[in-house]
Image (cartoon, rainbow, N blue to C red; front, side, top):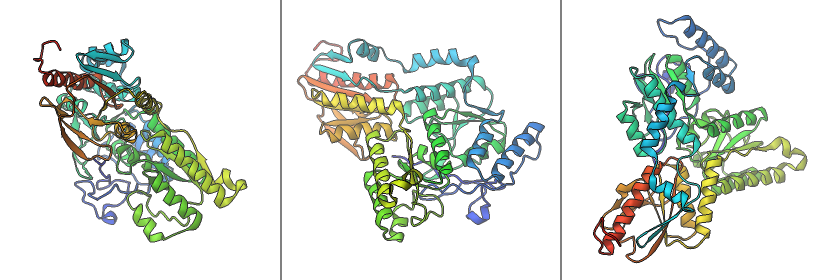
Length: 477
């Protein structure tokens, strides 16, 4: 899995002085983990030449920063005249036709029309009933395509991968969209200039990035999935309830980094094991230094487990397993009940449902596919840095079904060899993975995977099966 880069401001930014942070003005900070979001401070730097709209925009941001309110600052940014969250109607129909040509699949359409099952030779394919491109991903890609058509002559940047799919990101590069340079945890926005167009990806961007780009004078096109921004609204509720946000997610994932930037106090827990550790600390205390070391990558600046866990609100990275998020919520509810008693529970614990519908639908469909018990193996298709796809693979592993997570047809070699990853991100290679006789394959794909990619993988599987049966490619089995 790749981690998102850290973010810090260039010289003159209101985020925090470079000298105090020990940073270079020409690049963004290099660390082994994301920087905790720095405090908001007043005093925005202005371009040397600016029009009245720039002055008005900067004044609005300055007032929001002076309030020390992340909610107010975000509202000031998104209400600006250079901030677009709706796309461009003038190019929408052209883009719709373009995406249909590039991403749809006749084979997948055939599967849907045939109750999600097709037979080719000795291969039976059973497709999960919810799979692939979700509404938020399709919207983000469409907005990126529309942006390229709307601004044919302008320099266009994107702050990260638009979605976790290598073919889609490669297509944007072909269209001349520039990806903000990054190396490891280093993210360099120093090349972005006033007048440039900057796309924010489906996972969102940090508040600090949004502030920097707005201050720079960029035209911002925000493709953030509405389910992600819904979580940000939940963090506002946590703050109003004086609760620390406990975020169920992966601290190095782009979405969680963005989400954490909108929280005042936060702690990221990756799984039930880490959540239980925190719950035990709330109930009985523990080794403070050990706690701080354990979550050093995953907490807000100045976090103190002895004082900041007296009231908690639960939120999540939208692509996590819903069952685990629900269990973590119940764990903290019970923990606060035991620690503080029934009369205090309403003040000590808050939780809202922030699991993405599309994520849940794909997980439910995977359960149905696995519970049927009639597949010999499962192929999970999606980008290797896709969190929601990793959980689909994890579900197959927990069910004890042979499963292979691939990101494209390139992972499936004609000589019946497959290169795949397990849910922990480890890469494996297996020879002879596809049996020569009749075989039933369960198939699903992550929310960032176009149907065309799924078709390419399936066609490769059909070809391998024919070859292993001694049937020439193009012949009949």
